[in-house]
Amino acid sequence: MLSSLIIQKLVQVVTLAIVSCINVANVHSYQNGNCLKNNQSNVHLQKISNFGLSCHDRFPENDRRRNKNIIAQYCSSSSQEDSFSDDELPSFVQSIVLKQVYPAMVKHTKEYGNPNIPLGNNDGKKCKTLRRLAFQKKLTDEEMALLEGMNFRFNSLEEVYDEADFDECLERLLKYEEEYKTNYQIPKKYKPDPELGAWVTMIRRIGRDNIPRDRREKLDAINFAWISTRKCGSSFMSNFRLIKEKLDKCCLVCQDQDTTQNTDEDCVKEVLNDVDVKKWIRAQADAAKNGNLSDARIDFMDQLPGISWRNI
Image (cartoon, rainbow, N blue to C red; front, side, top):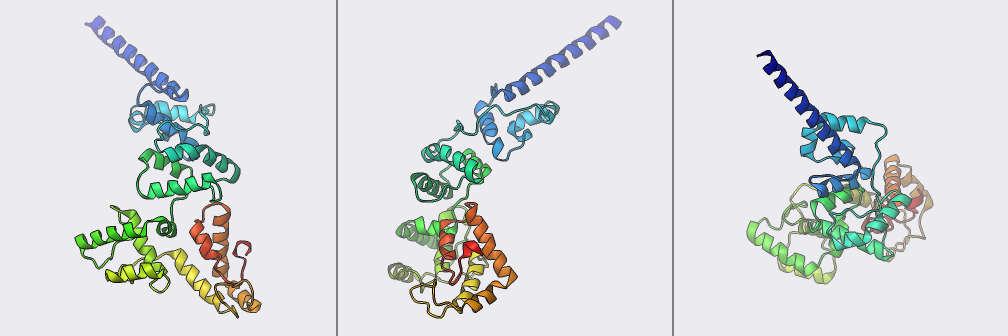
């Protein structure tokens, strides 16, 4: 009887030792980038770890639960090092555009602290294309996670409106109205078609008086509701309009938006003496410098009369 209990105990000890060795081996395989299971997912997690993921989050969720203590011990080790280069294209990337521009985005991040390559060259145009693909939900979840981890800037409403096909969006809007009959009160963040929601929101911001005549006539023809009954709004546009209105009063002769001259300097100084105004303008300047202000919003800021907003 006693010998039987001893044998059972020995079997348990040996089994635990084997399991422990397997777990340690698995951790070492992760460290070396040679994962035995779900390899592609692990490569994804490791590839984007330098863009925000913690050591713990590099491991798949199932393995984090099974090997909690082993992984915690590994991650607490000061000797651990990543075994990959951020320059390498993650194997899960499917988008041709992302494959083409990824090395340039990594280089831009190293030089400027962000992957948002401005327009002016082919790489900048590819970043613009990526934003459109993301807004249209044509990138995979892994590709979106990669871009988010890199702090990639996605499309603003202004850019969606500029890049969208007007007649195509108008047709989709008519189908939406036919189905829901809301007098064109589509949510700004309409999940089934986020591009359409953003497009309608931007049309209302531009306003009936400022939109091109041919587009205004098409919208009037369908009895488009130019004023939204939904409670929403852009903080950027609200602040921009308020400040531009104040600065416009400082402009002695404002024709064809030529506001670089003929301004009342004392009036401009008075506007900028408002702490909140100066703080907001500086925030936009910092965002532009860091590559986090959209081209459309930069165009808006350039319309502010009498000031050099980047140097406030």
